Length: 121
Image (cartoon, rainbow, N blue to C red; front, side):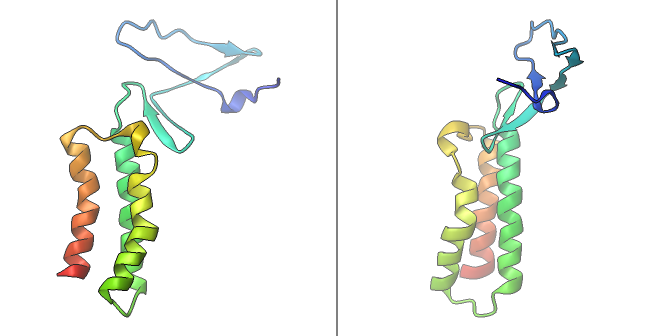
């Protein structure tokens, strides 16, 4: 099996890790602290903060697009748009990254609060 060396990276886990340099076919592999794999951000400390930030960013952008483009702001339609366009970004593969820090939960819930403040009040 051939590997594309440009796409291969090294991530060091643990405090006592020696952080050796690794080579593949004579090329040094890049060392990273966070990497996206199958749509989930994995960091060197195995915390889900980066994934929460990315989910918040995507959902917040889509909420802004929804706010700018929808003229008829009927509650039923808006809930349908929210459930089909925004919520999947917040819930994507949540069993894998499961935000258990309060700061991550607050960040995700900000999108929901913004939606209810803009449309449902």
